[in-house]
Length: 251
Ligand code: CA
Image (cartoon, rainbow, N blue to C red; front, side, top):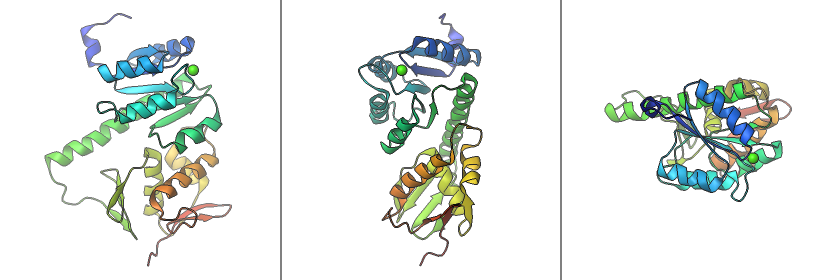
């Protein structure tokens, strides 16, 4: 791969996957889109590369020899200069997905193998857009204080859509992007039942390979983060056979 001065300006994507064909395929398509790509098949090398020169985004396969992708993800999130890098997880099995989500690793998105490269490129692009938008929010916040920030407050839960923040009893909670979108949608429509299909459509949109079970999995983790007793939810109510509802009248 030739390296030129203009490459400095390109977004740098680190692809961590031990199947070389897949790395080549991803690199080919991302480079065509104007990204700079580095590939490695080793989790350890990925960490070294990332610590030394943090990439703008990481595509990370779970199944890797020696150190697996989950561990790599965990360490990236724990590293000072790497904590905020968007991570797209690749997973060979749907069952792994539960593990990924359950471990609260803070991956920003995931794809199940086999995936379409076109879809992967679209996801990467969407992740950069999101990342830019979130950073714009932070920057403009620093520039000028917002006079009228939109806030949704119900019971002990307060959601700041522009800041992408949620507090419960004044205490900040860390939600994944999807969890945040789910909660925002539910709170905006408090009192109304939202079907799984609608939630899927609004939160996941084009990501066609996810099924309605994904909604349930995310609701479960969301409850663990905002409900004092997730087994007896006070806020997010299950409407059997239909979907979910944010309970409007909080005493
Ligand atoms: Ca692999």
